[in-house]
Length: 238
View 1: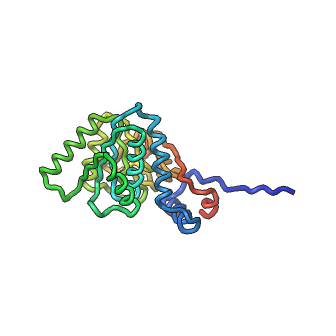
View 2: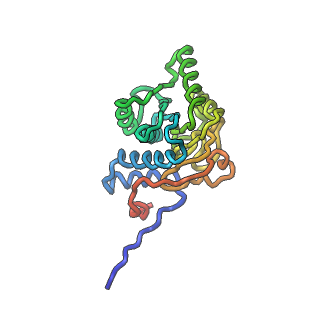
């Protein structure tokens, strides 16, 4: 007599709390390393993004201090390895990144990828200089990637980040959001002022509830759900 093992298919919509539970179960109960999950997420995004670029393109990657920024760092590294020219901008303070983002930054620092830093600690002349450089990078690039804030962020972006979002939105580039456009509420779909206007959103594991709301549509662009290598048994516990 044969037996058949059946698995629950991953849900297509998960709340922010459920997504966090997926990560926690995968790491704590299944023994997966959080860096491996970040690597899977970033590599999946890079593979998708590469299909939308010319053979050797200029790409701007905007990274925040958290794990969304860590995903962006992985994406930048893989796109660089694929032959693209990267301008990486850290909208964060030195030494104040999440643990996994910091680990991936250290890898990128061994490459020739140019890394710029933007933060409130800059003097007005320095801030003008780096902002002008970012604007030049956007003008000369084919794509800008938003890895600033993830699904856990709520409320209005801080003035510094808001200024960068407006600059990115004003550029005539392909605009790709990682997991969620910065400024969009993952639960309600409510946009902030400003919110990143993505042509495509590469989200992980499942759509978020806010993605189903009409008010979110113009900011999401086309939504693509990418796996991060979590076994289907994890979803049986959600």
